[in-house]
Amino acid sequence: MATWQCVKQCGACCQLDPGDRPDLEAYLSEDELALYLSLIGPDGWCIHFDSENRECQIYPDRPSFCRVEADSFERMFGIQPEELNDFAIECCRQQIEGVYGDRSLELMRFNRAVGI
Image 1 (cartoon, helix red, strand yellow):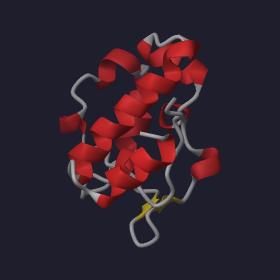
Image 2 (cartoon, rainbow, N blue to C red; image 1 turned 135 degrees about the horizontal axis):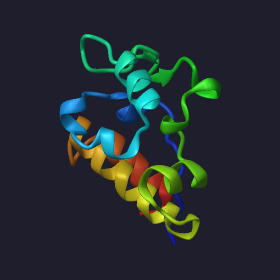
Image 3 (tube, helix red, strand yellow; image 1 turned 180 degrees about the vertical axis):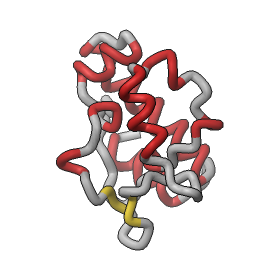
């Protein structure tokens, strides 16, 4: 069985371009949406993403919408805790493919890490 996990030095989720996420208002509160939009740099990446090391500079203190946790996903998407693993894997796969491509090293690393 595949098990979700964050893969170091990926950062696909740090690509925050709202054009790629047109339904932000549907799952973020007004305050969260304002915070989300304030995090977007001129290049579409999170201002806290260290592109050289490919990691989040505020990982322990990142906003709740940046966390793959049962309570966050239930609140934002209505995902029940027992569905979180499969949902998170599919979300990550789609995001990694969109940012890096469906034959990227990042996607291969993610698939291997989660057991696909």
